[in-house]
Image (cartoon, rainbow, N blue to C red):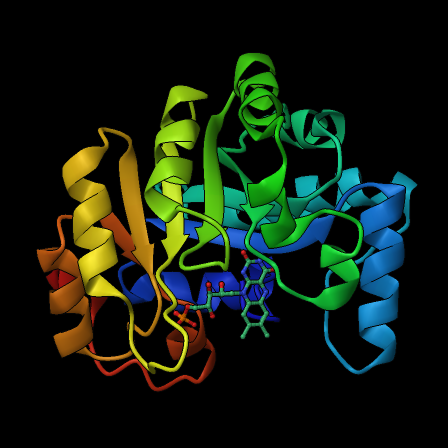
Length: 236
Ligand SMILES: Cc1cc2nc3c(=O)[nH]c(=O)nc-3n(C[C@H](O)[C@H](O)[C@H](O)COP(=O)(O)O)c2cc1C
């Protein structure tokens, strides 16, 4: 999830030791597709397909990974203003994890109440539960930490209560080019849900600091895209 996470790319990087590969993020409904098209117009690379083509495209991408790496879990990161399109993706055969994007901070996505604005929705718990109750696969919720006006621990508890399987946290801290390890540790000490830490894992030392917070796993985006990941994930 850093601009080029399609199956072709993921198949190349999985051998570095990853046990989950995330496709997307994809925009699934009319408002998020329209927002993403505006983002593309200003030069960003987003995964946008016409509404009637997204489902088949994601199905093919999952198969392309599973055909090569049958033991890797495949996750799909998705944006939608309502739960149903996410439920439809979550019922694709062979998909292991559907990930609800409560993380994107592109203005066009925020303007429609999606991405990290989802963290402010009074019905967020119900939104997540609807997905959890109606899909065959596991459910992850990707959030950004330290969003103004949001208590990250409170949100973590809400996501746990809603029944999600994973809390995927971009532990970003404003003004710091490193993850907020204290925040991750506090969350890990206060929830039972599996926590996947994210942000700034681009070397062994940062991977070690991430592990020491108590996370159940960590994810890497820019470090993989840059091609400079100087260590093997399976060493952790
Ligand atoms: C160009 C770009 C595109 C991204 N697209 C997504 C996305 O679609 N969904 C998502 O959840 N995160 C997205 N991210 C965020 C990354 O997945 C990750 O959370 C963030 O870059 C911090 O982790 P890192 O330090 O390992 O890169 C994107 C990041 C970049 C740089």
